[in-house]
Length: 308
Ligand code: ATP
Image (cartoon, rainbow, N blue to C red; front, top):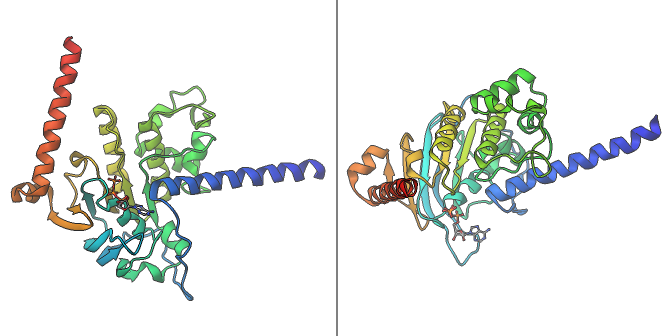
């Protein structure tokens, strides 16, 4: 029996390693390249991964990936505990860079990032990242069952907890229509899920992880209206009462944010609620008008296609 056990155990180990590799890949794709210069300082403290929502604060943050090019030029904002702040702005303005600094994939050049009143450099990286949940643009699923893919959010969670997370993420009803239900294999070698379904699996995983801070990195690609609405309500349940930072590409998804930051070339050029920013009739109002016109055009050309 021992002869059988050792290779099986080894296989399990390899499988575990592959899965680890995949989660690293997911992090790499979602929040990008890990910087090995980031280190825990001696005596670093632990941030409790679960518990009450915490405040996130950026104080005059300057950052560049290379010394010759500044990407963030004095960014300051606060996400009060349990609130939702959205960052909007053109491609390349530095939105994702802000989420990478919060996750401490890089250290700031000057200024600081604070979570629950402590500089992120004071925490162990492990505990900081355990307290932050990320719903990435493109979710990479493991070649395993749907159950495993959700359960990964919190190893040891009960079946009821996993189903409850799937319900909140609005994917449970879909899962139970599959012949093998939660035991359905997904991923490259299993059932191919649509982008929206994959994202809801990622949301269920995050609901289960129950992090104190949430980063939502919205998909760039436009989803159809029904999918967008389903994802929207799944995202609202994960973000409810949780400190949330949204990297947004479509303004329509962040109209309910407590504060919207408009980033341009690494500088916050406008900030406020959706209504206040429309009232101000500045950059945001211009972006909003442009997106509305784009959407109307899309609806009209669809109607035209249907008639034709
Ligand atoms: P998008 O809306 O397209 O996702 P973004 O606003 O999130 O864009 P960032 O990903 O934060 O933009 O990138 C800001 C700038 O930093 C870009 O010019 C980008 O090319 C540059 N950049 C991003 N990652 C790196 C890196 N690892 N090394 C060097 N430059 C980088």
